Length: 193
Ligand code: ADP
Ligand code: ZN
Image 1 (cartoon, rainbow, N blue to C red):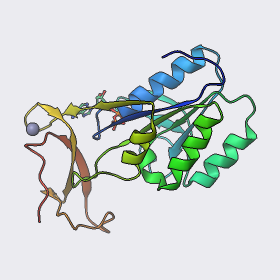
Image 2 (image 1 turned 60 degrees about the vertical axis):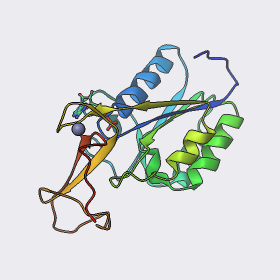
Image 3 (image 1 turned 90 degrees about the horizontal axis):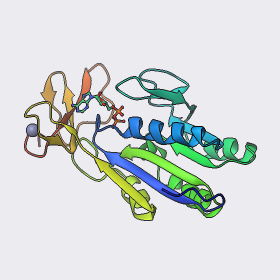
Image 4 (image 1 turned 60 degrees about the horizontal axis):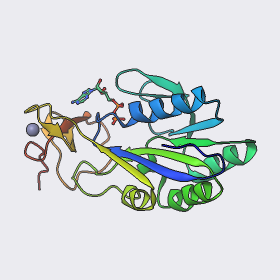
């Protein structure tokens, strides 16, 4: 990519869980730092799996990030920063439809926006607003993880509740149940009905 100051665009990094989205986001943000660009990184505050104030990949690579729960908070931080060049957002799928307009405004005002987010939910359905963000983005990279069942490329995220594949209609938050996620290919991905 060519970095011309003042020309904005959107990069979307997508794929299943464990596909390396956070790693790639961190890599790009660190390279922008090496280029002496002013960056700001956000993560959704739902996701504090390793650290409250950093984006941390499953392989423990990390970068400072501000935990936020909505688009309004991101706007506040962005407006307070002078000479901002690059905005990174992890778990972009959690911010709701309002993020689409927000990142468009950022790109229109000359910022480079780098988004990482799940393209599909555990059912294999499009995870909104990722499809909209991918459509608006100048650049889209879609990664696969490795299927933990068969070793093929994994495009999907398997949800497991108390050791069993989840049902299509299982609520997103199951109180008292042990919820976990695995990378799986199309063939090994199971959604019970
Ligand atoms: P994402 O943000 O897409 O969930 P991360 O960037 O956090 O992914 O983590 C990617 C890393 O996860 C890989 O580099 C690898 O070390 C680790 N990993 C663990 N399980 C798997 C798997 N099934 N397939 C691929 N990578 C995996
Ligand atoms: Zn498989």
